[in-house]
Image (cartoon, rainbow, N blue to C red; front, side, top):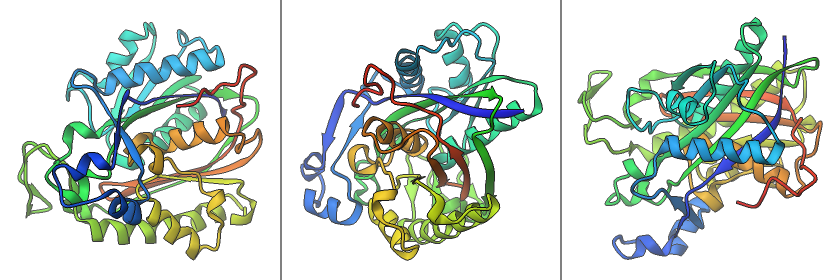
Amino acid sequence: MNATISSIGVYHPKREVFNSFFEKSLDTSDEWIRERTGIERRFFAAPNEYTSDMCVKAAENLSANYNKDLADVDFIIVATTTPDQIVPSVASQVQARLRIPHAGAIDISCACAGFCNGLILAKGLIASGSHKKVLVFGADTLSKVTDFTDRTTCILFGDAAGAVIVEASTENHLLKTITETNGHYGKDLYLTSSKTQINNEEVVANNKLHQNGRTVYKWAVQTLAKGLKVLAEKNDIQLDDVSYFLPHSANYRLLEAVFNELEIPMEQCLDSVRRYGNTSASSIPLAWYNGIREDKIQPNDMLMLMGFGGGFTYGGLCIQNNICKVDNGSPAKV
């Protein structure tokens, strides 16, 4: 069975945090952060605001923008590294709060690759004929697991959520996909509060994000450059046929390095990292939403999505865009 996506919603917290925030406690500056990451600001959740809260707001934004009834959603997928609790799942809490009566619900954990992998799973559920309407979220409250004494990581992260509905359709707009993992890099990007070893190597179990920046950066550049080529080949297209690229927004300088290597203008790479920081699983839907709002992404545009993150794992797919900018001007500015 074919699948399409015709609606999108996003949410970010109210607290806006500029680079000057870090100058008060760290040896850093706005200039240093911009030069190395491109990040200008990010948003942090309130102390009583969690991933499930942001997911509900993103779903409400989607429903309001596109007049979508959520009552007949039959499966919910939440991609997150920062669940409110381990059990119950964020997805089950979203199901309850949105009063969706007949839906399966799962969380998936694959860091910044989460949203793309969620879409790939939803595509499979639709293709199997077992489900018809899947609500997919990418959402993270990374500020709650950030070590604010670590200059190399704390400047990067922000909080946000994005949501789309993957639906059965007469036409297929979710095209071929790729997925891959190299778990040997587990210790180079991790978050744990219990086990103190990954692949028999010692790690710090303090419920804070830890990252080997140089290793992650090198792997991400190589993986994204290679992955985009492989995904194009798998879909029998050339990179020149892609209207816009929506990679995970980890670091704007990283994206510049990849797209310079591929000789693709940066105007075709839609990011969210400069406005929102690295928001992990929500970075791609944020870029997609704003690309539509700013009249860049148009109906039938060929999009190439690629998420990559902790694990190390990545996933990507080509999508023929079927989300319109609706008559009332929505999506609204966020």
